[in-house]
Length: 290
Image 1 (tube, rainbow, N blue to C red):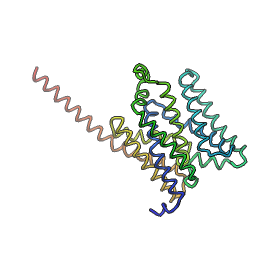
Image 2: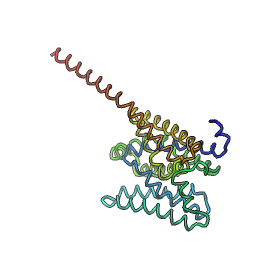
Image 3: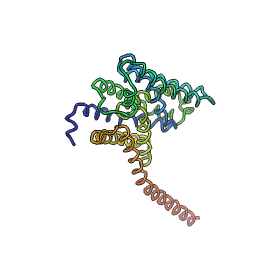
Image 4: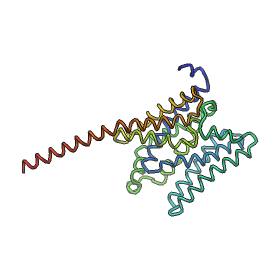
């Protein structure tokens, strides 16, 4: 199995997989808390325009995707603030416009084609270049710095924005920072997981961790662990079976979720029974004392 490390492109792919496994759940836990689980999917649609713009201008698509997806994320946040009843329609137009813009620009590019977009839509381990590794590493460092360094503030605004505002936190600034961080995470993951599937890697490890843990810190730690395991396993599996890594990673993540849910349900039931029995004993003791 270790022979895959003899290939330079696999070394780069595995490194990128580890970074994706860390960053996606680290951002996803906040999106799940604020019930914006599909935000990554919307950013992925917008990032497609950024990828195509990179081909059109002859620059690294990772950096153009960062710029365009960050702008799209900020627009989504502004729509959430001011959109009210028409907000869902505006978001839908943004998502579909991002996908259509990507297809249009890639076909206008002299060096691009729809085949180029496919590698970004579903991931491709053979296309992770040394330049991509540098870009992904820098972007991943930014994501980790924000999600862990500002975890208390971000957790506060995700739990209760009004309370966070009363305590003096810059809620709008933090919301915009979280949106930009989510956009950066999408571009980090697009080479390995793909733009269409990155949202799943943000959400599924977090959902799996929530089945087995209590408390924010434990949930975050387990979600990142699950993320790293499934991204590495899915990347290795895609190498040997010649299948898209994004699909492999997401299917493995869903399998882990199903397994943890199956194991956690009986434990939760027994815990609830023990709590009920303890409460019943306390009630009987109080009746005797009375």
